[in-house]
Length: 316
Image (cartoon, rainbow, N blue to C red; front, side, top):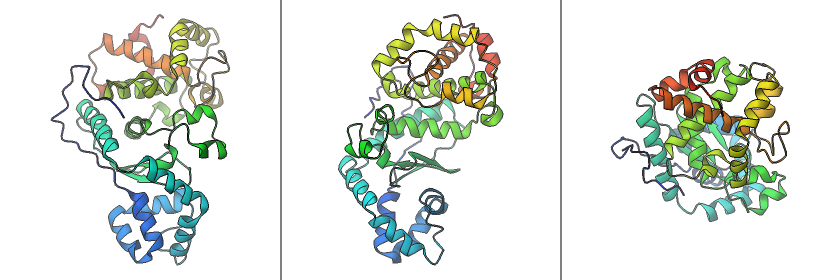
């Protein structure tokens, strides 16, 4: 799934982290067909059961009188039955996933030694959220990573640009980046200006790149090779566009989302420009900043976006 020979001179072998995916999807399904197992499910997964049941699939908390019936209805629904069959075929075991997650989180805790490692639970939610976070858990929806050729995704209306990243190898990257993002929130708690949000995305990409040093850029950025080539050829043009249109300090969340959010392309540039192209641009700025400074990774994540831009001396 991810090559893990270190290419950056960092030795993480002795970082005491082992990630083992706990199959909440299988245990929940077992409890759905044998309701006597619901108390054991609660003991094993704690509040995650409630977050998943009430928050994600909308059947209420596990203590409600109707819970057992609703859980059974959920498990027996045609979409869940089909999703579970696909998940079983694509993920017959967790060995490769455990190895890739462990390697990535070893790097993350090497760079952030005070950061706790999460537990990782897998779930099947009927193609809802790809990731669900609590204060100690990263939940991953395996039915959102069945492979970009999965016919179900077309039937369910997922656009092609999203399907490209709905494959198993993206799971470690998405889990690690989601956990990092939960530990370090953006400036303004997601309500900051364009530069702050853009640079936050660049920080996440920079750290993720370092945590999977041998992974392809297509995997880290979620871009095709052609899209990455486009970014490389148009780096100066993108930056010039942002400056000429005075976008760096706008605080319109609609405008910011248009540039930093997931999309088939960046309409302000060209149809060849991938959605989130400015996040790649921010990664390049952060990369230059880190080459010029001896900041730790935790200092980077806390650093003001304006300071990063100034000290990077970015001039593509």
